Amino acid sequence: MTALTLDTSAVTAFVEDATAAPSLHNAQPWKFRLHRDSGTLRLYADLERALPKTDPDNRGMYMGCGAALFNLRVAAVAAGREPAVRLLPDDSDPVLLAEVDLTGSASPDDPLALLQPLIRRRHTSRRPFLEEDIPEFLRDELCLSAHLEGTRLVFPDAWHTESVLNLVHDAECREAWSPEVRGETARWVHTEPSGESSPADGIPAEALGPGQWGASSPVRDLTGGRTVAGRGWAPFERRPHIALLGTAQDHSVDWLRAGQALERVWLQATMDGLVVSLTSQPLEWPELRWAVRDPTSAMAHVQMVLRLGYGPEGQPTPRRPVAEVLDIV
Image (cartoon, rainbow, N blue to C red):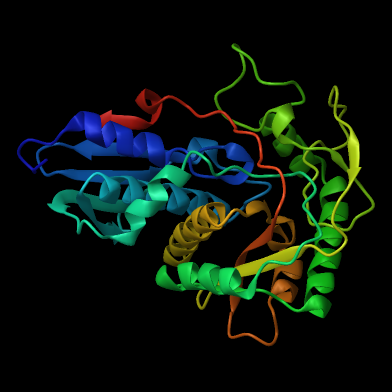
C-alpha cells in the first residue's frame, strides 16, 4: 500500500477499528476523510455530536476522538503500516484534529500490533467487580502504557480514593438538579434493549448494568431515574480500585493525547484480564475537577477516572456503519 496505490479496503478496516473506541455516552463524535493521492487520513470532530451541557468545553469529545485515533494507529501497525500522526495540523480548521500519513511501513515487532485483537473485546463493564487486589506489576504495566502516550496514570491511596468517591456522589447530586444535563443524557441513553430498529449510537439498556445498592463504587447511573425493564439491583465492591489519568497541561492537544492514552491503558488492561468502567462526572464540574487531582503526584490536570478490577465483561454498544463516518476523496 503506497501513496499511489492506496488500498481503500484496508483503510476502511482501519476506520472500522477506530470507531470501536469509547466516547462519552457513545456519541461517536468523529469523522474521517481519506485522501487517496497523498495516502493521508484526516480525523475531524463531529460537532453535531457534541454534548454542550455535559461537556461544554468539548474536552470529552476530544478524548473520544483521541481514543479512536489510537485504535486507528493500532490497526494500521497490525496491517504493516506505520501511521505518522500530526495532531491539530491546521490552526485555521479547529475541527481537524489529526492527520495520519499511512504510506510508511511498520516494524514487524511493533508492540502496538499485539493490541489489535483487543479492540473488539474492550467494553465498559458497569457490573460489580470482585473484591480482589490488582497485582503491583499489572499496575506498573498500565502506568507505563499511559507514559508511552505522554500522560500519567496514578493509583491513589485509600484516603484519596474515598475523596474521589465523595466527589463523584457530589457530581451526581448536581446532575440530578440539572434538567439540561439530564435531558442531554436521556437523548443518548436508551431504556430499551437494542434491536434491529435501535439507534447505531448511544447506550442500550443491556449495557447499563444493575442499579447499585449503596454508593460504594464510582459507577455512573445513566438512567436519570427512568425505569429500565428487567434491570435489577446489586451490591458493588466496597473497596473499588480507581486510577486517575492526567496530563501536565490542559489544552486541546493534551485532551487528544489523554484519549490515546486512555485507550492504550484500556486495551492493555483487557489483555491483562481486567475490566474497566469510567466516570467523568466530577470532571464535568469545574469547581469539583481541581479536587480530584492527587495532591501527592505531579499530575496537574485529571482527564479521566478509571475503575478497574476483575469481573464480568461489559456488553457491546452499537456502532455507526463506516460509510457514515468515512469520506474518500
